[in-house]
Length: 264
Ligand code: BTN
Image 1 (tube, rainbow, N blue to C red):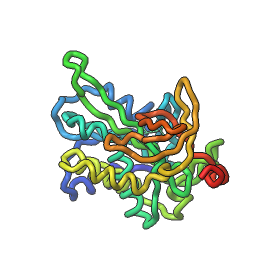
Image 2 (image 1 turned 135 degrees about the vertical axis):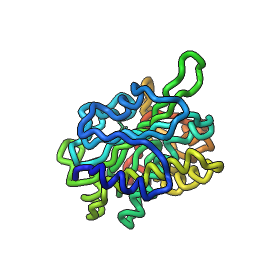
Image 3 (image 1 turned 90 degrees about the vertical axis):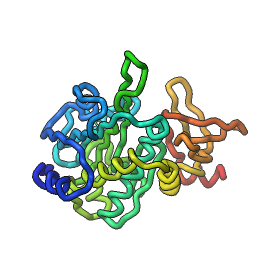
């Protein structure tokens, strides 16, 4: 379904959050645009939205397939966040996406640490958070939260076993304008909240990685571990042969159910 800027503008006019937005029918990547754009440093929150990305980016240098009008792809830009808020941006974004989709569909969504939103184990949404640093002062200049949600139709590529759309999984056709609007409002709330811990709690409740046997695929090593908890910085705490460590990023895959049962 095509994004309608008039509908979005009306939602914004009737809402209580002030932000600027730019819509592109097509773009290479909303995150790349957000990184390059010249913006004042302490202005309003800005949102770059598109219905198609020719070079959508995922984590770890992967592509994020962004089919035209099948999903919605957007980046939320903010400046002047303190380190506490910056460290939990992906956590907060994941919670905002789940809450929005849950309100719209009445169904439950899960989180796979750190940035995937799942519905019954199929990926519905990915989040890529990037921070731009002001090289003259070494301080954070802006934070960019990129969110891609598969909304409509089916996934017909080789990814169809691991990814799906909100429509296919829940049978509900949600509004792309309202989805972006609600997620942006949720994030705007987070930017000014004084209690970031409540986002961590909501994240933990939905995180299906916890308690599972996982494989950690880092650039130089691959090992199996047990996911124990999400710490106060949103890191995944794992146990490997009695050693506890906290993962900041990297790729984690949850072992299949049969293996979970054997290794309990
Ligand atoms: C992932 O699954 O690894 C993260 C995917 C993030 C995709 C979004 S779509 C909007 C924004 N622009 C991009 O190029 N990527 C993010």
